[in-house]
Length: 137
Image (cartoon, rainbow, N blue to C red; front, side):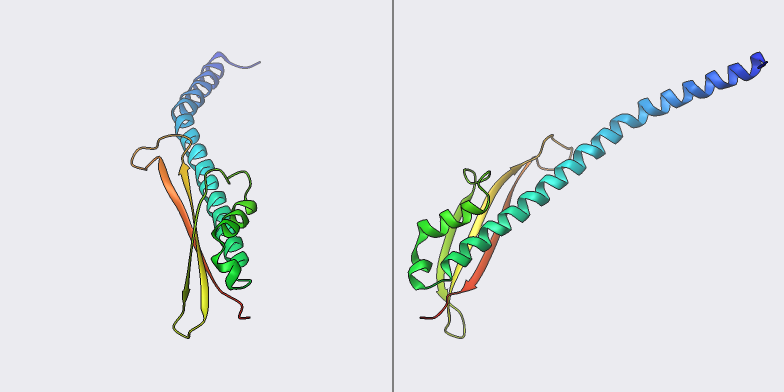
């Protein structure tokens, strides 16, 4: 048989555990949401990087493709069709210091967090640039 004193101690320990959970649960939820937002921004930065690379790859085929702004834009947006409506794609042509032609593609995406964290901006722009040498004729 369990003594009444032992039952009181057990009930106090259960009460302490409930109070600890009540104090820590909001912090744990905040850490979870922050981790989800970090994962989301990492996913979008990888997707935007892939879009820029695909656009630059399309433009590097020859000088006609390098000048095809619409083709570069559609190649970049085809890499991430779920983000295509929000992506901004711009490209420039140039010549490097060795005299080789290149195409540079910049892709931007407006990112917004799930919730507003104190001291952290709730929106940011994810921007990546890929530059590739245009294949000579």
